[in-house]
Amino acid sequence: MKITVFGSTGKAGQEVLHQVLYRGYTVIAYARNPSKIKFKLEQALKDEYLRKAPVISN
Figure 1 (cartoon, rainbow, N blue to C red):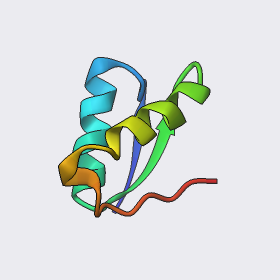
Figure 2: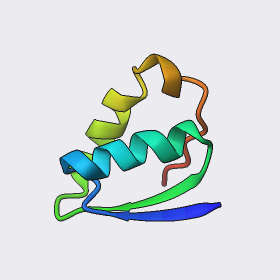
Figure 3: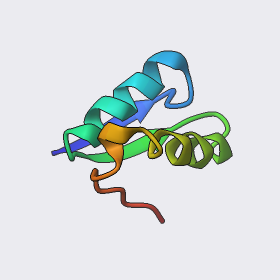
Figure 4: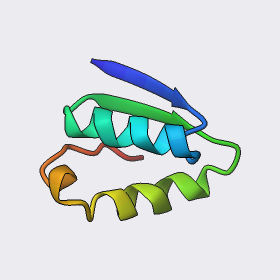
């Protein structure tokens, strides 16, 4: 399943990203400052439950 998340660097957006990555979905994340998305995803991947989740990045 593919999911698009708008506002992906905010509190709710981060929680949505965590949940959908955990479930193995493909995510397209949008934010006003896209450089924050990569930083937050790298930080999120340190979480125990996300270590095995697939991440596709360009």
